[in-house]
Length: 225
Image 1 (cartoon, rainbow, N blue to C red):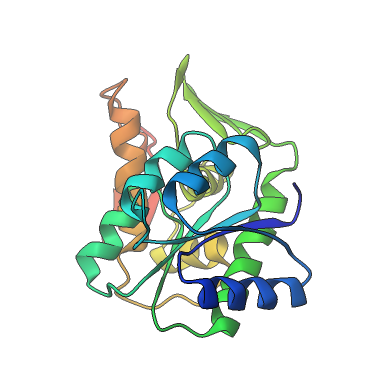
Image 2 (tube, rainbow, N blue to C red):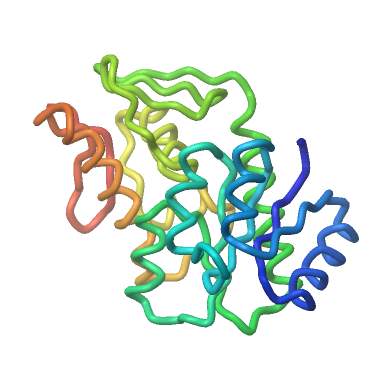
């Protein structure tokens, strides 16, 4: 369902508030009030963005996140009262694309949905690129090393696509953040490091060859070795 957002939030008032705001922004919405219900919906419908609360009955947001990523390419925004850095990094490592701490501004949530939805729509265009044994198909949201599916998240695919299309360029964290999130970079944010680390780990499962090189003091590029 194009332009449809899945809202997974057990608080009826908050769920309805988000739905009303999204509909005013011209999105269609599907509401879910439990983790188990959301999992069923995620298996049957393709969404453009998923908004996921962590404190859910039946199946928690932390448990639900990896299960949703098995069937969905939609970017996921986490809503949580937990604002500790380690919680945010753990969820980003687990496949979340963005994180918003409660209480949150509805206007900011809609802005983040717009950014992720725009990127998701752009990713739907046919795009193929390759570097050595690394092949990326942006239309089908897949990246393969040889015959091995790397199971990258949407953000990991976008980062890798940028690197592959510019194999000789060194990208700073700010460059990658601005290109992937279409947002202003806040110095000191560890998000880029987490996603680069995830990509490296997934590649490392199948080869010892280094594909992403760290240029100390500057940023990252594809390895020329």
